[in-house]
Length: 165
Image 1 (cartoon, rainbow, N blue to C red):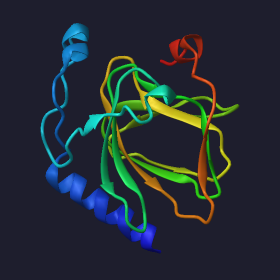
Image 2 (cartoon, rainbow, N blue to C red; image 1 turned 90 degrees about the horizontal axis):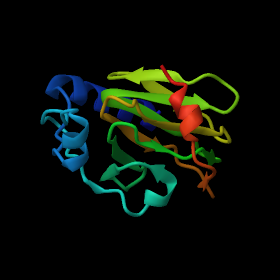
Image 3 (cartoon, rainbow, N blue to C red; image 1 turned 90 degrees about the vertical axis):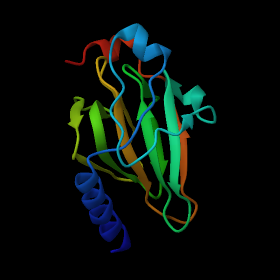
Image 4 (tube, helix red, strand yellow; image 1 turned 135 degrees about the vertical axis):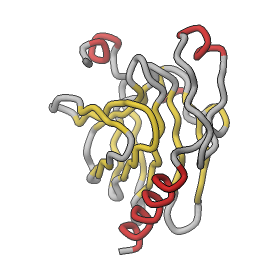
């Protein structure tokens, strides 16, 4: 019940404020893809703590650590995380800007855009990240559980990623 109310609150805030802010950096300039305009959530700092689980540059802004972990995760164009599994608790993604993808193991990738919500059940092998030509940001809500953990697995290969439309 709490998670459902939190999701509704965040979606309402996002739509009322029109997004969040991001800074421009050298990769954006090289790719000639402009960083998103300012708005509700800040881009955060380079995601160095989890960099080994991402291909490309991501940014992390922890919004809440109490009761339910909520982070704004931003991916530069082409950035994606490794295949991974959330054990016991699962995860909810709320797309707040840009275009990206979500894929479960053995299924085709789904294109994601602003306003989309992805409910990831526990024990589901998956990955998510930006489209090659777009910045991408989502709120990542960790579903609380006793003994929950994330198991990081192999990279999404360039070949797999290159097949996305």
